[in-house]
Length: 180
Image (cartoon, rainbow, N blue to C red; front, side):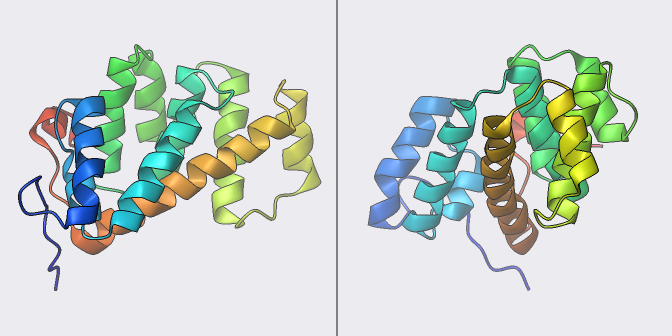
């Protein structure tokens, strides 16, 4: 019984309207996920803030894609996997990276593979990762800031993935070609 609404500027609760304006400014439209989150101005504001904080992290576009898509694929998110495929393309991330993430096949570099494995360990073990995982992560050239930045990405993706599962958020037209 999925009864969530995808709000627009006219139908959204008053507190969400400025946040939806922010979405339009950032993305050119209101992504359906944001329209669903508009039910709660607090949820939408938190998501937008986490998104910007992760964008501002120490990760480059490839690394952000690895963190986002690793979590999206692990959570089997019908909305975020195609959405972040489109985002990766817009960020000029090599298609081979996104395909490897979606297909759970090896990434083109050991450093990115270690980032995926570490992100998976954090998600699967709820932050209780082994010393071996940490040693590989740091040995690959990442640092403690990067570790904490993964947690910001996890927080953002938990919000979006779980909300999409609850609401069965319809995939936006601009992401439809990335649905499998």
